[in-house]
Image 1 (cartoon, rainbow over the protein chains, first blue to last red):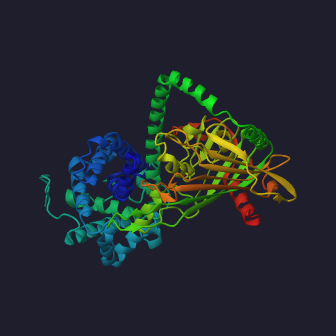
Image 2 (image 1 turned 135 degrees about the horizontal axis):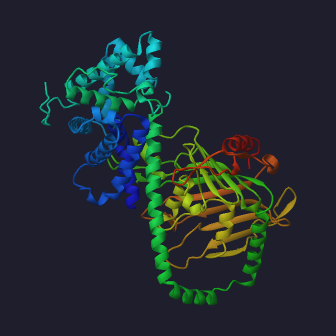
Image 3 (image 1 turned 90 degrees about the vertical axis):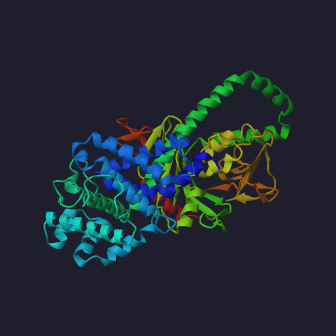
Length: 184
Length: 388
């Protein structure tokens, strides 16, 4: 089997993870597209530097993180909410998800689905409308007869609740190994 | 879900997390964890699985294209260096392997078939069959055997060397993709995916499954990512740095000029189609050299008077040696071509306002090409009415 084929296998095995990681910090879908593409091409160019004794996922996320930060430097609003420490924390959590039970990344998200099922009605409805049915927040807010701002707050709280649920199930890390000096 | 507006993401991006839109309470860790959850949830979005695969396909295609260009450059350099040796070898080769009288007549018939194929508009159905070798499951190394794969489509040839090849039901036609789908238990391909590519007399073009159109001045530069992959895989054991040829009638006929033993095939006896006598030409790839290339065998059935191709079949059997699979387990690919319902599609042209060139840049050039969607619909109807 050629190196290209092996590389493609690795990329396809990690594609969902990489996609989710970039989505975590990217501002819009075009940024996701660009960073995803650049990450894979850079990984291929630097494949000789990859230490095969180490897992591929963190190495791939490291490349993606550099491209994300590079993209953030060009966008003031983006830069404002995305700093190095934030990214380290996100990377840490993806590393934890990598260790969850399941062969594929989708299988490792079983607990996330369980957590969604445990959300209260309002939060579950918000998650369902945006992430499962694919509505934008404005349309989702109208369908619930509420304002966009209220809906966004509801969605934000739902994400925090899900994060707490994942921490309680040890899918997310609760302790903070990075020295942010900003812990609660 | 509507696409985002990059110019104003906070309005349309349902996932926008700009500080001015969202509550700023909570620690930085909460924010990071919330963003991580958002990333994970994005995988649940409708169509996201398909988008992920398209992103991977684009990136891998780009890598393969760049690698091929590099290899082509290296090959050209090597060819230049070894040119003088090659010329001497070619002279010896020509002296030793002058075609027999019978072969000459078969070659003449082949030339007539080739000439006929360049005239008029003809529509063919295409079927590809692919056998996927047994492989080991990743999780526990147990062997799995995948069902043979097949793809159908249509080929239209026209004057001036124009052609359009449309394939239905394809995502990337790759055993690797099928394997991964099988292992994951999911089908990443959109259900009614189709792709089309062709040559309009001056420019080669491809409509990728994503809908993007790319154009190029040579077929090899275009490198359509669909059928190529299957053929490339099928031939890669023999010639890993060689690029696969397009699965079209013209290219198939052209490549029989060298490296093939061409002869008449009398196995069909007095078979006729619609009362017309047939000429059957067979070509078998010579086994000289260590790097065989192209289909192993080709059979062309043509009208004995007009030399119009009625059907053709070509096979790659490199994966089997004495009936056994090679250690590499490369897949076998078989193509079949059958003429049907000739007047079904006479002209389907449209004017495109804008193309995207091979570098992804919009081009103001306007070209006349077959319109793939219209063509596809018409062809599907034809396929339903007139099975070969």
